Length: 215
Image (cartoon, rainbow, N blue to C red; front, side, top):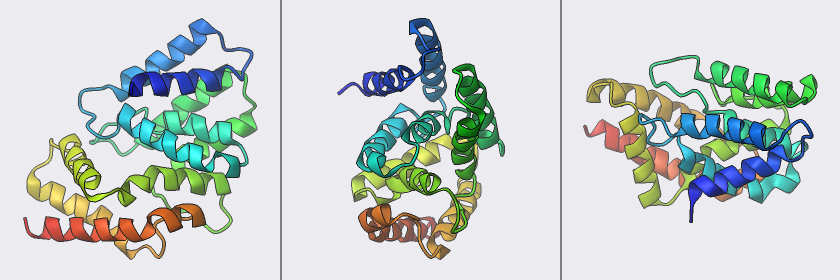
């Protein structure tokens, strides 16, 4: 399995739906994505993350109102990723908007894609929020519901991405994130992902909290 090839082929296939895209354009756009997601400081938010989300996307694609904007959001949502920055989502959304407008996609659809990306900043939505956004956020969080070995690998990779912080600072910051998850009534906002991953995710989150408390 070549994850890079799988991610690229799916992206190029998406671009083929837009007349303004050609080989030069698709190569340029993909090279930007591949370069960003291959940055050396990325241990989790890399092409493996995109590939994992693509698998989840395929399971719910038929349920989405505008699957193409969800797919674009998937590729661009972590384009900018600096553990020290508080504006990663805004910067990623801004680049996505620029690239999609250059493809000739209507502003209304581009805004939908941008909103998907911006929603990953807090993972909080109201009841009347776009259903596609809920599916997208659930895809992004689906790693929480992975089996034990995969979840442990995920936690190690997240720690590596935040290696600039001391163990104590990381423990405090990560605990805040996990506490937020544990206090949320539902981690997953769609019934599909709730049924698939909610129970396992809560177990994993609780286990990680306990692990951090022992340090």
